[in-house]
Image 1 (tube, helix red, strand yellow):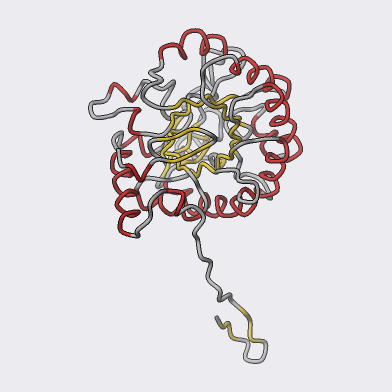
Image 2: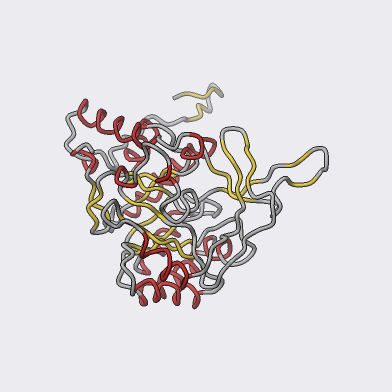
Length: 324
């Protein structure tokens, strides 16, 4: 691993700025079956979304390909908190990387209960999913209501000493205000962004392809939106020294570098793994090379270095022509 990729994040010393995203790598061991893949090559792995009780998830179809991306509506299928704690966490190789649990509840109180149970484990951090667009209850309402987001983060903060990462929804009016509310409630980090809500239709049946009718759009198609949201949230988070996991359509080292420049301290890789399981190697190499070429010692030297254009579009009322 390249020395200049070492990254400090929520008190954790990551080998790489890459975080494998929840829902894309199961419970941390699925991709390790692939030759050439190792969890040691990434800074952290975010485990599959976990609810208090077991959840069967949504009816099929659960995934469909879209132009430059995909829609998923898995519905948080998982064996429940107790099974994850008792049967899954003990089997994870803690020497390879850090592990983050992603939690989702049907009520504020349920979020708090799940956070409390994981507080007594050796999990390294807790990601609060307040913005899951593919379940009928819980996530959508919480993530799109800043005050509700505050309440969820607040109860989790009271119930755990673990670092808290709050996953923000792009499907809201003012993501920066929501970020501020989550920071006020005690989050240690922000994950920006979750998937956007989308739909795909089978023209033969005239029905949505996804059994849940709608789901989360991810992949390269959402990258420009995600970049803007990271930039907007960074204007708030930098005042409080709250780091961002930037995510949404990262498939190359250049994509990752863009997110870091926009304000992300770490970068999340998800959909890209489905068609290139070894993409993390390439992204690590590319980021390290970029840092060397620009005489930068670490990722931290690059975070939030975006320089906005000073010229803006104006309207010349005398000539009725647009000028720059």
